[in-house]
Image 1 (cartoon, rainbow, N blue to C red):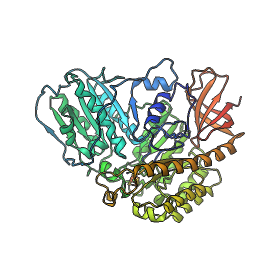
Image 2: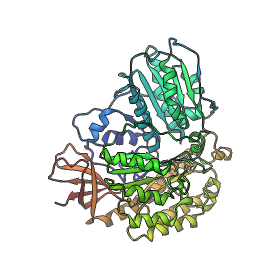
Image 3: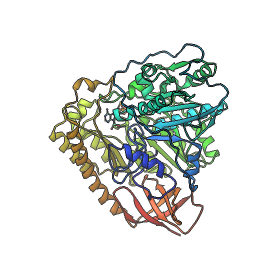
Image 4: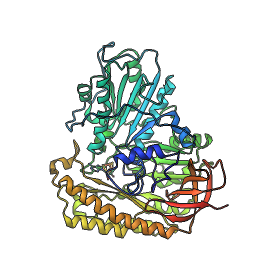
Length: 547
Ligand code: 5AD
Ligand code: SF4
C-alpha cells in the first residue's frame, strides 16, 4: 500500500501477505514509491511497488492484527480467479438509478445478514476509498469479515489504469458462476465500475451494485435500496462536485492514516483513464482536512499521508484558502503529528514553495513522488504531459537545491505509441540525470476513452517488455549505488512490522526507505527509533537499532 523502497524481510508478519500478492501482478519495476495514482505496490525482489494498481488488498480486520505483528495469521482465501478479461468497450450509464424490484434467483437480497467482505485493487486512493466504504457499512451495522465465504455482501473495489488490472475483477466475478447458489449480494466499485457501467450486469448478471468512485457519496442511498430488496443499483455520475467524506472511516493501518485532499484529475494525459473514471478535480476545504487531522492525531495516528491523483494541484475551495504548501505546513503543525507525506505530485504544479516547506518543517517527509513518464520531449508532448524534459529536470534541480536531501521517485511508461529507440535512450539518460531513489515502470496499455487510443498500439508487447527490462536494469544500478552511499547513516524509523525471527523488525524512514533491522527491544511497533544502516540492497537497507 504505502510507498516502499523495497522488500521487507521474508518472514515479516507485517507486510508479507500484501507483498506477495503484489509481486505476482507486478509488470513494473524496482523500488516502491507511490505512482501517479498514489499507487501502492508491494515489494518484490527487484520490482517493489507497494500495491500495484492491479494488486489486490483485502480489507479485513485481521490486517490490523497482522500489521501489529500477531503470529499465525493466514491470509483470507477468496475463490481462486480463473475467468477472463474485461473488454475495452465501455459504455457507462451516467445516472444513478435502480433496476427492478425484489429478489430473483441470481439476486439474493441482503435481508438481515449484515456481513461484508471488501477486496481492493489498485492505488492508495482506492485503498483509502475502501476504508471509507467500510466505515459507511460499519455505520449501518454491518460486520466486516475476512473471506468471501463468510460474507453476505461482497464488494470489489476495482482499478482500470492498465488492462491487466481491469481484468482482475472479472476473474473474481467469474468465480461466482461456479457457485450459482452463492446467496451473496455482490457489488463492483471503483474505476472498472465507472468504465464498464451497466455492462457489468450483462457480463456478470449476479452483480447487484455498480458504483464509480465519483458517486460514493450516494453509497448509503444505494445500500438502502439494496436492503429494501432492489435487484440492481448503480451510481455512475462523474459530474459531481462532491468529495467522498464519511462520518466514519475504518482505517487499516494503525500508524499511518490516509486522507484524500483532492479527488479526480483535470489533467488530460493522453494515455490515462483517470480523468474519465474519477471525474474532475474536487478539493476538500482545508478546514475540513485539518479537523480530520486533529481527530486522527487524537486517535493516536502520528503519520498522515495526504492523497490525490495530483495532490499538489490542491485548491482550497474556501475564500482566501490555503495553497497546497500552506496546507502541508498547517497539517504538520497539528500536535501529535510527526510525519506528513503526500502523493502524487504533478510536475506542472510543483513549485519552490513546496520545497521551502519541506526544508523548513521537519515533520514534512523528505520524499517527493514526481512521475516523469518519459525522458523524451517528443513523447511527453504526445502524452500531453504539459512539460518538456528540460522543464522536468528543472523541477528536479529545484528539489536537489533543498538544504536537506529529499528523495525523489517516479513513474515511467515504456512502449507508448510511436516511441523510438532514441526516445528510450532519452528516458535512460533522464534516469541518470534525475538519480531517482525508486521508479515504477510500466508497459503502455491502451485504455478505453483515452486520446492515445487513436494512436494505435504500435510497439509489440515483446518489444515493450524488452524496453521495460532495460529501464529497470538501469534504475537498479542507480539504486544500488545510491543505497550503498547510505550505509553508515542513521535514520529515524517508524516501526511498522515485526519479523517472526525474534529481534528483527521493519520500518520506514521519513524518506520512505524501508529499513529491515535488528533490535534487542520488544514492543517496538508504532515507535520512532534511530536505526543505523549497515547494508544495502537495490530496494532497501538493513540496519541495527542504535541503543
Ligand atoms: N498504460 C501504462 N501505464 C499507465 N499509467 C497510467 N496510465 C497508463 C497506461 N495506459 C501509469 C503512469 C501513472 C501510473 C499510475 O500508471 O505511469 O503515473
Ligand atoms: Fe496522472 Fe495524467 Fe492520469 Fe491525471 S491524467 S491521473 S495527471 S497520469
